[in-house]
Amino acid sequence: MATLTQSTTGSSQLRKRNQSAYNAHDKIVTDVGKAIDRKLDNHETYEFGGPTGVAIMMTIFPPLMYYFWICLWFYDGQLVHPSSFTDIGPFFARMWDHVRQDAAPNAWSVYFYIGLVVFELALAFIIPGYEQEGLPVPSLDYRKLKYKCNALGCWYVTLLTSAIVHYTGILPLTGIINNFGPLMTVAIIWGFGLSLYTYLEAVAMGTQLRMSGNFLYDYWMGAALNPRIGPVDLKMFQEVRVPWVLLFYIAVSGGCKQYEDYGYVSPNMAFMILATGLYINACAKGEECIPQTWDMFHEKDGFMLIFWNYAGVPFTYCYSILYMTRHHPDEYRFSTAGYIALYTTLLVSHYFFDTANAQKSRFKMQMTGTYKPRWTFPQLPYATIENPTYIQTAHGNKLLTSGWWGWSRKPNYPADWVQSLTWGLCCGFSSAIPYYYSVFFLVVLVHRCERDFERCSRKYGKDWEEYCRRVPYKFIPYVY
Image (cartoon, rainbow, N blue to C red; front, side, top):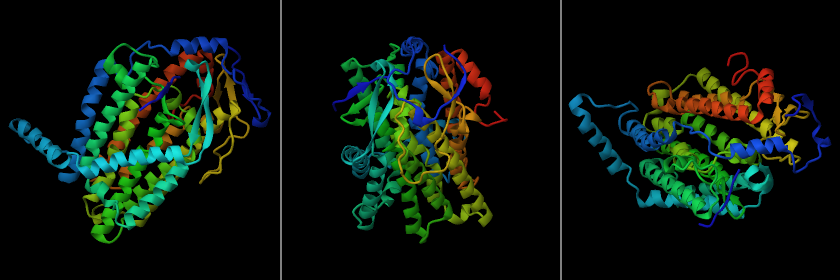
């Protein structure tokens, strides 16, 4: 696979600017900012516990995924463990038997998983899309990469195609949940393999960036910043087209399985179909906002992103779906008031999640003169700040201080986390495993927040201190 690998003090006065009066220009980073960027584009310190930490995480992730699946599928959702010291060996033998017998790749899982990836990649090339400029990339002399944003059209084509193959019997969607174990194994193998290929290709082409010199750590963090095939940015592709699409279809498959078994789909399973559908639709309709995010601008394309998008997201964020698939709906049925509270919490948190992300990304586009309204469905109110206030930094970048971002530095994080919490709440409290997503996600968000703030402190210096003074709360106003 041929790829093109791309890489990534003035006044603190609060400013307000009308977008229509903004004249776009290429040089928005000062000489001071460029010196800082050159420093930040070199490896200086280890993150994630360094080589030892990343080795541990890469070692435990797959067994943990298998363990939770085994508990949900074969042990009523309970966290099984050895019954005694002498049972430790037999316990691991039982776990291995489940993996060997029930999660070994079969023809259906290989064809479906690889077929989905190839199908979505083909759509990414074929379907017309909106061209969005990204942020200036320091390692490319601040050139802006162009991104083909056609995820929404691809999403609609995928929905139509899946409906046709399901109702015609060509590919019943119940096959996804029935082959969950084998599919997960294929995804795990794909994640490890693609991570290695992407790393080796970047090193071979001499396009690696921010390398530490330690293979395990660089394999985890990645070598390439923005690997591409023609107009398709592979990092953006893997963030939207496979993980959330596959997660949605796992939920749909669970609904189809319930309908096949009981003749109806429970409100709880319908909730998960709605929740995953809202998420993939938000990613697709606002795809032009993704090039302005931390993942696209700074994070390299390594195991951390590749494995988690291709395997982690779809096969660990779905535990409530697995639990409901293996239990009769009467076991987790709520009152009408309970369902109203559950659905309302999801929709309200999704509103804040969607609009907060849109505000930040559109602000960046406004400040670089690249913002153009797109009438993708649905456009929520207050997703664009009309006359944003900001702090002009000595680096050259601007720090948003209005909209939801005037209340906290990461308003999208608590909204996103509340969504994840509802994904566990929808199946009650009989099993702790469906809450894995919200617990894991909380750790990720707090850690990511600290990584981001530490980098911003180094990048913006006193301007960041002023920003923190004006926006003192990290997540929740007046709380934290």
